[in-house]
Image (cartoon, rainbow, N blue to C red):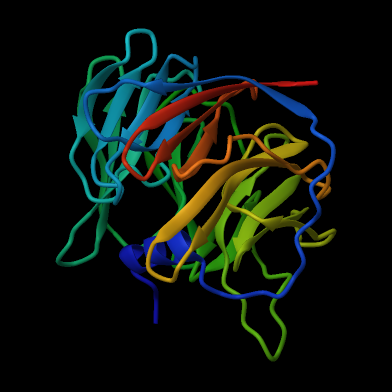
Length: 311
């Protein structure tokens, strides 16, 4: 039976499969944190995502409802659009002028896609009554999704460089669409154990996959070969082609009790905690285009901006 999008959110939040693989040991610090500041916005905000240009952050509610934008120049907040799931992995055009987000019908669980102009606030419909899909990708002037084992395209946005490789999850398996060829990537499952995956993504140079299984993040080649265990890491995002940033969290089975922001090399080395250990729970990082800024939220809905540099 297919997972609903809400069930998928729960899987992503917990990724509850337990794998007994040892995490890489921490090594010498490679990055310096030069500044950490709270963005004093007027609302509780979660799940920050950098808009190209680094002057704006997309944010939503804790359960991904709705989408808003924070202007980092004056810390002002503007609500953009209603929608259940709108804040879950929105896709932004390369020029930072538009964002594509989802809206889930709570009764039918059908999804619709909306295009939001970040300059004018105008909202337009792209598609309605779609089956479940996970990741949205923007390719040329089309929006791409993986639905029912096929890549589906919808017109609706413009000004994005071509990208013939698309990575998503279907029924909690990593799926790669490469020039129209669909491949299921499942390097950890065995005849005795079926492994579920979440948080799959493609490296900026389109040479590597990253995904989470259980409590650990992994990097591999596009076909699943060359698998590297990055250790305990949830909600990982790419800093560049060599490093990823994620959260190292702990829970008591019902709620998160601790979480810090961590960076690690894709070879499993140079693991370093970026945040300062405290009682505040730091979650769901986002990295800007040049890898110098990391945004994240606390469980109280505070947004923080961290500046880092490589030593």
